[in-house]
Amino acid sequence: MTMNQKPLKIVLTGAPSSGKSSTMRELQRVFGDQVALVPESAVVLLSGGFPAPQHGDVEQIRAFQKAILQVQAGLEQIIPRQHPLAKVYIFDRGSLDGAGFWPLGAEDFLQQFGLSRENEFAKFDHVLFMELPSPEAFGGVNQLRFHDYQQSKQSEDQLRETWGPHSGFKEIKAQATLKEKTSLVVGLVSSLLNKA
Image (cartoon, rainbow, N blue to C red; front, side, top):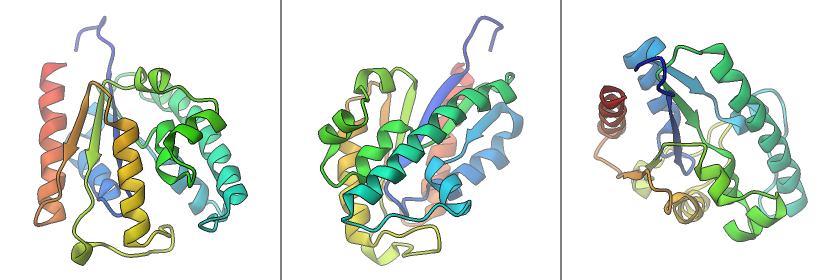
C-alpha cells in the first residue's frame, strides 16, 4: 500500500452463530498488525452489562439499537485513529446490521433510525457475509447470544436483503466445518491485501 492509498474497509456480517467471532480471531492471528479489527458493538454492550432485549418487545429492541448505533459510530472513528498503519480495517458488523434484528423489517429500521443504505454502503469497500451452518451444526445459545436457530435464520434473511445490493458483497457459504469456512474468509482477505 502506498502512502496515498486508503486502507480497505471490510464489514464481516452474518446471523448469530454464523462464525464471525471465530473468524475474527483467526484473521487477527494470521494477519497481525496488517489488519485492525473493530469489535461488534452489541457484544461490547452486552459484555459490559447492558441488558439483552426481549424478543418481540419493540421498545427494548429500539433502546438496544440506539445504543448500538452510538457505540458503532464511536468505534468507526476511534479504531482507525488507533491503528493508522493498518492496511485493512475489518468491522464485526456495521450500522446496517441492526436491520437484521429489527422486528418490523429492514426498510422500517432505516426509517426509524435515520439511516441511508447508500451512506452506509459507502463506508465499506467489501461486505463478507457468512451463511449460517445447518440446524444440526448450529452453535446454540451462550451467555451473549440469545437467538435460537429460527430467529438466527430470520436475521440472516434480513441481513442478506439489506447488504446484498452492496457492490462488494460476497457470500461465504456454510462448509462442512467452521474451520473450512474461516479459511475461505482468510483467503479472501489475503487476496484483497495482495491487491491493496
